[in-house]
Length: 168
Figure 1 (cartoon, rainbow, N blue to C red):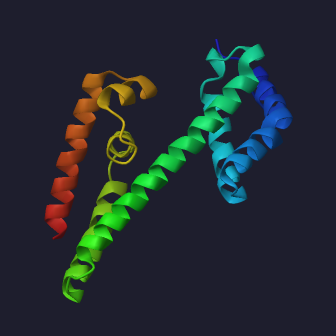
Figure 2 (figure 1 turned 60 degrees about the horizontal axis):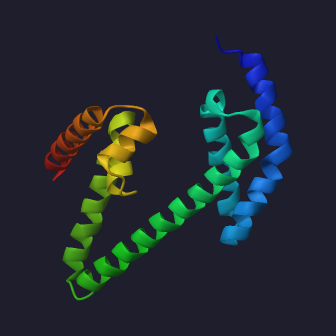
């Protein structure tokens, strides 16, 4: 049985004792205090979500590991995004203004379609397409079967096709 009162007290104690250390650690890695503030919140969300599996003596190690992994995941995503943008702009640099407008409009439609996906579909879709995670990795990290991930991706792709086709 979950003891929410004790869990909250434990979480508050861990948060109070470690927040500044974890935030500063991310800041030292990134040199960006705003990013550090954002990522440290994610670290403590993960702490709360995994609280039942964390041993008291490994809590701080868990926090630093999650912080480091979160920072490097952010960097990988940023690098991929930058590579995509550079490649994209190299390809469209010599295109007509009409073409560029069409690309921008399509991007807006795509973003709206992605944001309208059901939460589970959207999460799995973005983990796969943006973070580059395999279906197996997504299944392991979300606690569902690989078959469930496949079904959610199929559903996401069908919904996106339907939404984009309807809006074009």
